[in-house]
Amino acid sequence: MTIQRITMILCAGIAALAQTLPPPHVKLPSEFPTAQDIEDVLWVDSLAKPAGWSPAEAKILSADPVDGHAAFIFHVPVDHFAGEPKYPIGWPRAYFGGAASINWKDYDAFQFKIYTKMNRDTLPKKAFSLAFRNPDKGKNVEVPFGKDNLRLNEWTTFTMPINRLAKLPSIHTIGFYVCESDFNHGDMLDFTFGGFRLIRSSAVKITSLECNGISYRETPALDVKVTAEGSSSTIGKGVPFALTDATGKLIRLETLPVTRGINEIKMDVSELRLKPGDYQLTAFPKEAEKTIRVGFKIVDSPWEVKK
Image (spheres, rainbow, N blue to C red):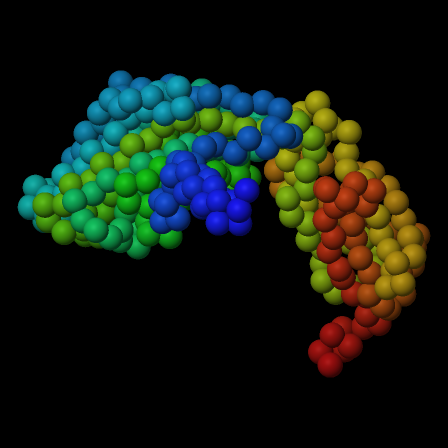
């Protein structure tokens, strides 16, 4: 076989392969993350049933299923003249009143998909907000959506850690609303939501670890803030923590109890009589894939901090 013949075969093969691949500018459809350590997924299809929503200045329409689960369209015709006489530019909205029946705080994250369609070419900074309502109005939680976390004519996946709802004693409604002042009169907005689900990890994970950055000589306790995820069956076993000095020498290794979400722990170190220097606190020191560290400093006095 000649070199010319081999070259022709290779070129033909590359051309055939290229035809099976999407052009570089085409984004493949995203799917839900399939992390191996997800133990439990609770599909909340009740959130996607139009009958459960109460819209105002907007419509809730049925939509084709998303990943085999129910979906709906939040349809908003922007009208700058249809509101109350004093406030003609309004807030199209829709609320779901059955949120109290959902076990939000038994899971690590809330997740769903959004498809954004408009008659305009660009998204505003804020297109709509997701709101979690509590009877105590001062403790509501709102999440803005816009050009930073949406894409026109594309599916995007939204994931929110449940610990963002930690300040809410309870959740009685969840909803979406649009500020018409963020759009032009006559704009048509269609947000398709679907695949609502709650997820939690099969293993305990620490997603954030904080420690008071500076403490004084022989401090009796360290103020440690830990955000933990995991199922109730595993999180109750606690989390191992290692305390080391600047040379890496192990000073203490102990397992402390944590609960799902944000934990504020007073770590007793009174018997260690810590001397001035740099230290490190490590969660899961013997499990590299889960290890998370934070450094802190011990100083002689407040005067040293001011230097």
